[in-house]
Amino acid sequence: MQHAIKTGEDIRWLMTHTGGFRSGYVTEVHMSKRRLFDEESGRDIPAGTTVSVTIRYPMEGTIRVAKLTMTGVTDFSLLEQEGVDCSSLDVIQAEYGGGRLRFWFDPQGELYIVCEEALFQEVSFPLAASNPLAELVRWTFQGQAAEGPTIQWLLDHLDEAGLPCFWTSVPRDSMVHPAIIWEGDLIPAGRHDTHSANKVRVMAYKPRAEQGFGLMLRILGSQDRAVRRIVETLACHITQTFEGHCLVGTTLIPGHEWENWLRKDEGTEAITGEKG
Image (tube, rainbow, N blue to C red):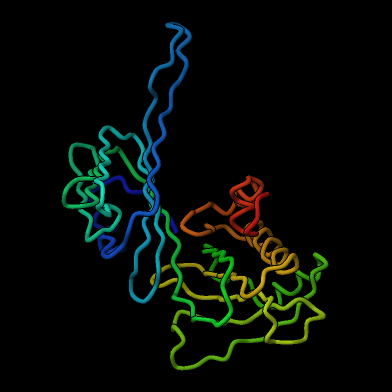
């Protein structure tokens, strides 16, 4: 999901939706400066500063990863003290006045930003059940459509890609998070052992208090070429078909940019565990 933050009313929405990011922590801070070449003077002139802050925080039994991209930044302070974890948050403060947004991410003002406007983007997911098999890769997509891919949709696209799989559902019990719609494993055809160490766990869920759908792909157990290709193939088909945002680690990526991001070294490494 995404929401433009421009007014005091938008600030109130942000604080209500996030609970002030209580008990969260900052995972990434990026600053970029734009400069334009002025032909008349023959010099580069400042054309704006952008700061983005990514925050991971718990809310109502889910984990949320949010990115605030602040443009028109006029004041930016980031102070890291030796021996102190400045990434942990309690409740942030934010206000609007004089045409400016002001964010205090901690009481000491170690991370403080003043800007003209901000774009809020977020992906949330329920806590996945623990599994005795090691989890090697996690890829999450939150789409804007009312309905997301079905199990048959996934199987059909894998068949078309020459990666036939069979599906085995994960038994549901009373401890299953209520947001989870269905969950199961994709196992490459020819591996008929449902306890195979090489599988892709798929979980479909409904984001809390939000429109759209969520889908999480996880590689469990020993990673090999077949299961890596399953994740890569489905990720590309999903982002080509549905509008939304991807989450890899704590990096949020617009769905339409996924394939370009994947072609970069860091993208290839993130989803396959290997250098491109």
